[in-house]
Length: 62
Image: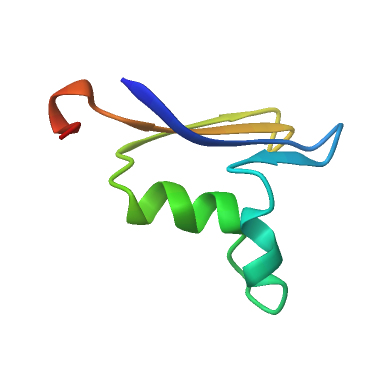
């Protein structure tokens, strides 16, 4: 798997950086939208959102 996007709630930091700026009025954070729309099929959520990671299967990388 390849890491596409992530969020660290303790530091309020996400990757891709500033992805949520375009989603300020949205219920879906930018890092979530980015991961889903770039083909993520695996979400790892640690401690109910403290750390969240979105992964793309390696075979799906073009």
